[in-house]
Length: 407
Image (cartoon, rainbow, N blue to C red; front, side):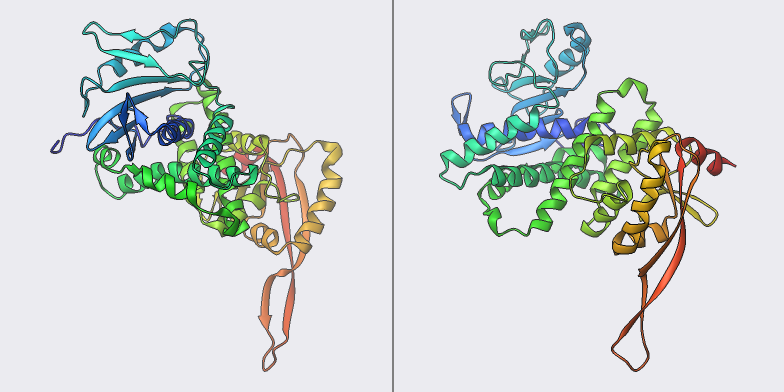
């Protein structure tokens, strides 16, 4: 297929987190069954965003191609064009290739689609249903993981299933992020998407890994990334008609940037989102608050360090903080205590001194002190003397932040 690759939408936001999870679900089902259309399939390759939204390859041929739609419309007519497109896919296909159509919501008719040439598209079945809600795909995938562990006589506990789910989700999403990197590095988008496939053995390796021996910190970071990915995409996909193309592109850029962060930077993101409660239990509404700020502010977002806005010497940091006037006093007190006790938070707020909140509150100013921002060794002594640094922190609403940045 010299220089001829299928068109790919891998560099745009197309709901690829849900798409990736559907691909993972199907891949696990294939690993469990071991056969497809009565033919043994001991190994395969998963291809994302090329021949179709995803495809399963065996020995260089596509045994199944899959289109995934997260639209909420209940009408089959909404998907007519997409079904026709799916029926016409022929890259690496044979007469035995199965074309599947995945939907996230129930529609009024999910019978097979057949085009004028007789090519057939089947609506994919999840147990007894021909759709899978965005909020259900995780649980269905975990059930498949548990099933795989059971039939292969591997340790099977809820904790291990959750860990393996996080690592598998990370593997799939990282595959898309890696392709983005290749594209931005100069390789042709269509070539990258077509050739960069994920071997089923990589999935098996994770499924067979004894995660009792894995450091908790690594798992928590993967859990954080998975939660962020799910919540961020859920916010965009469920309300996609409310976002302009520019906002969707911005969201995609921020998502890719944060998902590509290392552990230390991800910890900083957590502290910036929830400065007085920087636990690992990131909530969906935290991510939704954050997404609403970055998609609504019209000023350029700086993707360097932490995603932030910049004006003169000030750095404005989007947060998930949501306050009412009655809670301002309590929040300020809690913030001062956290800055004093939490070195990571103190460092973040020392560098990014203006926090943006969705709350419609007056400009909140905090004068914080921390002995954890800067430390210098005393000359000729092993004793470390801490310099107590006093610095201001401001909390302003999204509207006020935009006024400042545009001034």
